[in-house]
Amino acid sequence: MTGETTHNLRGDYAGMRPDYTVDQAWSAYSPEEHALWRRLYARQAALVPRYACREFIDSLAALDFGAAIPRFDEVNAKLARATNWRIVAVPGLLPDRVFFEHLANRRFPVTVWLRKPEEFDYIVEPDVFHDFFGHVPLLFDPVFADYLQAYGRGGLKADALGAIEMLSRLYWYTVEFGLIETAQGLRAYGAGILSSGGELPYCIESAEPLRIRFDLLRIMRTRYKIDTFQESYFVIGGFHELFDATAPDFTPHYAALAGLEPHAPRTVLPTDRLAG
Ligand code: PHE
Ligand code: CO
Image 1 (cartoon, rainbow, N blue to C red):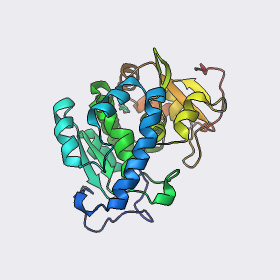
Image 2: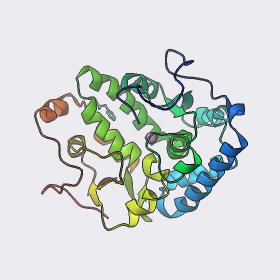
Image 3: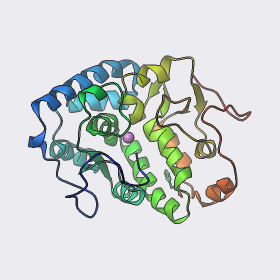
C-alpha cells in the first residue's frame, strides 16, 4: 500500500536511507513480538487452504515462516533464485514515488514493526505481518511478480500524468483485495484479505459484497474504502489475464477517465459481469 505522505505515520523514519530503506534489526524483536507473530500466523495459515489461491498456498508451505518473525535476508536468498525479487525493510508507508521506484526495480518494501496485541484483529496501517504474510508468498509466482514490477513502472508514469489516484485503485482491487476464479472455486490472492482473519472468509463466503468480473477501466473508476471490509471485489481468471490486460499504454485510459465522476464502491453497472 502507498500513502500520500509520511506525516503522522507510525514507524521511525529518522535513520532511514534516501530510498527509505532501513535495517530490519531482527535481534531487536522481543519474545512477546515473536509470540504474537506465531498467533497471527497460526490463525491465517488455518484459513489459507480453504480460501487462498493455489500459488499462495504452495509458497506459504514452502517458506514455512510461522515460528518467528522471519529474517528478511533468509527469504531474500530464496526469492532471488525464484523470481529475482527481494524485499527491503522500511519504516512504514512510503511516498508514492519511492514505492513505485522500489517495485519497478523488483524490490518489495516490507514494514519492520509489528502491531500491538490489542490490534490482533484489526489494524489500519500495514505492519510486518500484513506486508510479509500477505505479499511475500506471491512474489514467488513469476507472472504475478512481473505484474507487480510493471505496476511500479506504470506508477512512475502515472505520477508524471497526474493519474496516481486512478492507478492506485488498480493496486487496491488486485494486489490488495483481488479474487481469482480457480478449479477449486473462488479464491483470494489479494494481500489485504489474505492477512485478515475476518475478511478472508468474508470475501469468499459472504452474500453481502459484490463480486465483479475484472474490468480495467471500471476498476480505475471505482473508489474504495480503507477502514471496512470491501463492498466490491474484482475477480480475475488468472495472473496472465492481469498481466495482459494491464500491458497496453494507460495514457489514453487516463485521459478518458479524467473528466468522469468515480463510482461509489458499491455500485452495479449495466456492463458489470457478476461473478461467484
Ligand atoms: N500499462 C501501464 C501503463 O502504460 C503500466 C501498468 C502495467 C500499470 C501493469 C499497472 C499494471 O501505464
Ligand atoms: Co499491502
